[in-house]
Amino acid sequence: MTDRDKSERIYEEIREILLNSWDPVGIKNEPRARDEYDSYIGGVYNLLKNGSSDEEIASYLWRVIQDRIQVHPASGATEKTVKELRCIKLG
Picture 1 (cartoon, rainbow, N blue to C red):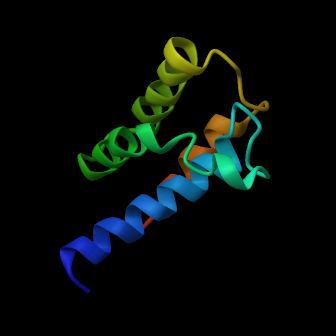
Picture 2: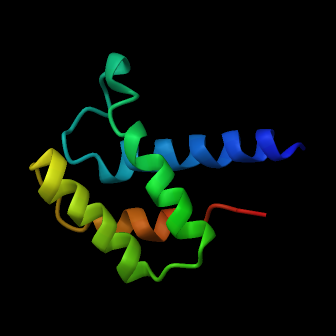
């Protein structure tokens, strides 16, 4: 697997987690909105790659909510999202 293939896989996994677990806007069942959270994937990837703590990742997601989306996810969604993000194989 090339580095590009690996990066694409990781980005797609992050995308799926943000869409299916975090989903503050509630669009996971809307096929035309699958790219709604794509602009946050790079930030999440960098946090994971740099060994950031769960709290730092959750804080990033909350900053996105407060600064950009302004709609809160379901209760516990951010914590669940961080746990799922931690399962992504980066190597």
